[in-house]
Length: 286
Image (cartoon, rainbow, N blue to C red; front, side, top):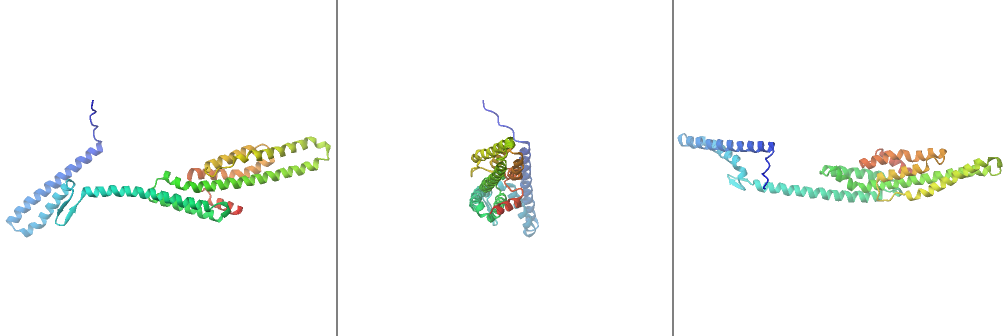
């Protein structure tokens, strides 16, 4: 059984009716104007009726323009359907332009991100401003916010990857320093037989710190992972060290905690929450 055609939306019916009424009124006005002015031209004179006749013709033209592919007369040419095709072609061209802009933007950000690594820290600030400029350009040409994130992701991945590696270096250095301090304390107690429990406690701490250093090696962030994964790696490292040595917990928190909201913001917004903090940190690492 054939399904009856669905009725047109309410707004569409009103729009069609209004357009029909406007066409009828324009057509009637033009016809009346021509008839009356033609009679006047016959009765009075053609000079006085020339302008009203022209107005009547224009009214007829306005009432029937959408019926013609090409209407020529008195130097007037209306190509409605041709204009519609040109508009469609222009929209298609604009879509291709947006896609091309996305590709160019992605290439620029990728090249810039590869230069702005920690071995060339002054360029990190420049890569950040370049990424913001590309974002602004893509949004200006009509690229959606979701599509903008794709070409900018190489930059955010690069800076998150470098940050995690630098923080891991700091953690290993601090853990090594802490073990050296514990070893010095242990050496002072070696000749004293009355501190066997303290010596055992220090020995366990040293072993636990070293084992945690080894266990967290595999948590290195891969270059193709983003800021969200970087934050997860740091939180896992913080969790592994937690509770081993109460005196060392504060050191780990000082290294990791300030950067967790920074990475969360980078993952969510694709932008730096506190740009100067990033610039200063990378420049200090040289």
